[in-house]
Image (cartoon, rainbow, N blue to C red; front, side, top):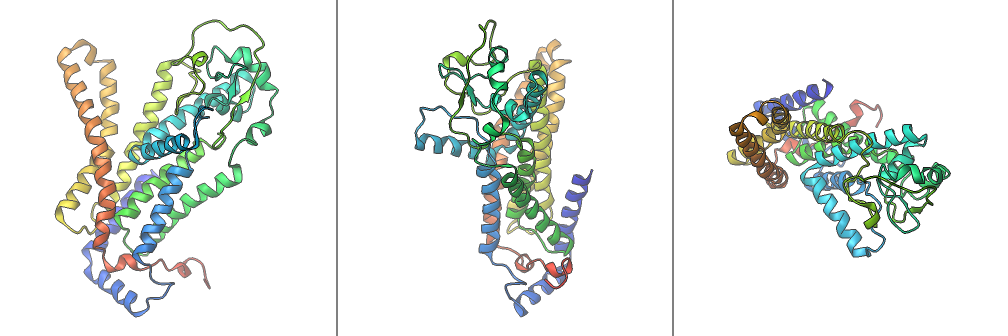
Length: 377
């Protein structure tokens, strides 16, 4: 509820700014009369602040699984770049994977009496057999769990490139950007489209970091554990005995596959709707052209509403559609249409975030007056 109130206030703020030219004129006068470091910001300040936040939300926030030990430095760099690009294009998918990994880690922790950090380490391929294969299957864990339980949580955390304090600082960075946007809102100062897009990344970044708070960061080498008994039975979606690392967003299926899929889709679609709704906050912003305004509006609405429609269609797939061939074609066509259009809408929003910087209202360069909140600043 608080989130939707926040989006409403952002939209109302943009509308007030657009509907009151005297406010823009007054802001321009203030900027020209007292353009000091404390009252004005430059275009470089806006772009640099947003890019730094987006980088922190995509590159730094990613908690990758343990990579293949045979990968070189360039291959590792390209691996993370691909994940960064995926986070920019479809950040809601990363949130869905993070939620599923958290649930899996919690179930491992409860089932085998280990910490959540142990559970995350199992999910990310952190434990390997003496033959070098990941111990990342529900059928494997009982045979290796006695050795895993002997490993201290501190020993796993020692492999992490970030501790709780550094992760907390990173979360604070995202919250600080949100605070700056709120301050501009309450002082009736407009947000640029780039700042609105960055705000969406900042909100999702905080969610990702909280979900992965107990997951070790950037572990490069796994821990070898010994097997205490013979393993039998089937494995999960991939065969760990023929692999040297787990997939990029792998998580152990502790529950039923339907529950795991529901967690992933519910998390991804729900966050996707929030992500698009934040972009809708720039609905009444000042755009350089009518065409850019409508492209932004249509793209934002599509990203905000398509996940909700997907939930309805997924429900239809399980109830009404299986008994109607025509319905199968209609639902399948809609889903394929969404898969094709969704990335384009994300791309349009990214491009417009930068192209609209060429024509900003004067009040966009007026900085927040923090002395209103912090006396004697």
